[in-house]
Length: 212
Image (tube, rainbow, N blue to C red; front, side, top):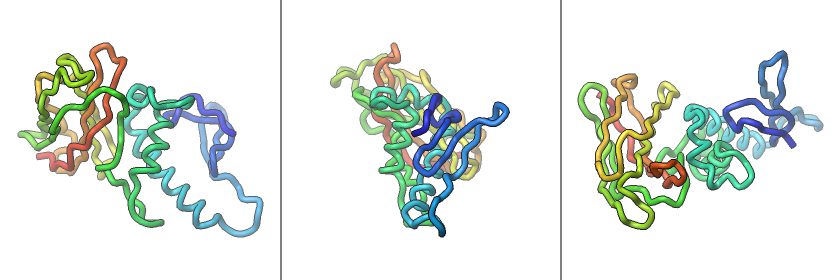
């Protein structure tokens, strides 16, 4: 069994499934575990490797954020690894080797806090995105001071940007600067975190948007 000290954001030592990790002269590396039998990997092994690589590459673009947004559901592992496990199982569509990510099923935050009602994202002027939602302060654990977490991922560039503390729940709207993705399609999500950072909501997909 491998030891992962930094989740999917850093190197690991040992074996994790069909992947072996280690360090050479201070450089982290990963390689496929060699097969002891003659012949190639089985179809099931190849499929799992492809799913693992696809989701891992995607989630790494969120940096350390997943350590906070998935921490309550890590169950003895890191937040990023909990996110990896969930999204491998739920957010992949298609058949090998033509797998793709179903962004509508991606979860980037998981917790007991209520998300907002009717969240949406739309293109604004000059590379801006306009997020909106219905304020549901007072519903369950939802507070007016909860802060929106806005996620924006551009599949064509493989880059992600996100904002925390952009707007409070009771503001019901937030502007996001996405000028770096002007002329491209982006995938968007929203979640909320309490002002003290102790509780988060499940993320919700707010759609694909063409950035102007």
